[in-house]
Length: 196
Image (cartoon, rainbow, N blue to C red; front, side, top):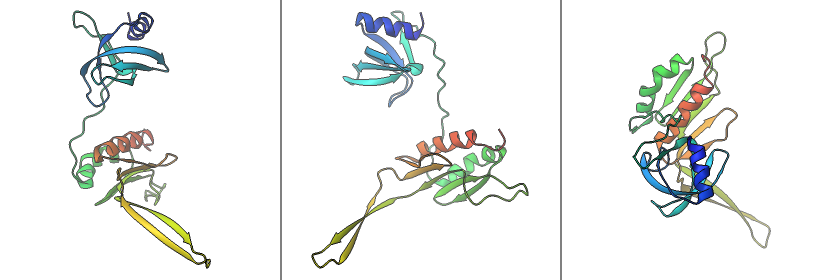
């Protein structure tokens, strides 16, 4: 029986399952779950490891039978990257891969970007994909007094997610760690690569 059928049977019979979940904060951990519903490749279930109702991706679930055997999954683990301490380390690690994909690579102490090239081989100024460190954010508040004069106030604070990612036609987003921004950077650099 495949994973989806086992989960659907568990929902109907309200039974618990022992699973190995290949995602989340503890990938590969054995968990006891009680599936509640399944929709669009996602299972809503009570996880008895954390005693919280969570959403699990079905492609990352392996069900353990009473003998300890696991069901098959076609989920492939994400590439494991070394622990990066700087954008220079990221640049050195990815440079050859990005050049092979046909990109012109630009590197500074707090950013990496990839650019397409014109027919003559010169790089375009606008990047297609980039990651960069942006530590601060600011908000401006306007205060009008009774005389009608304008007093602007600017509040500057540190971002919770300073490792930024941007790509052409994608929403810019931030991450808490450099490693997570690198993961998305590589994904989109490969997806949009000139030499696919």
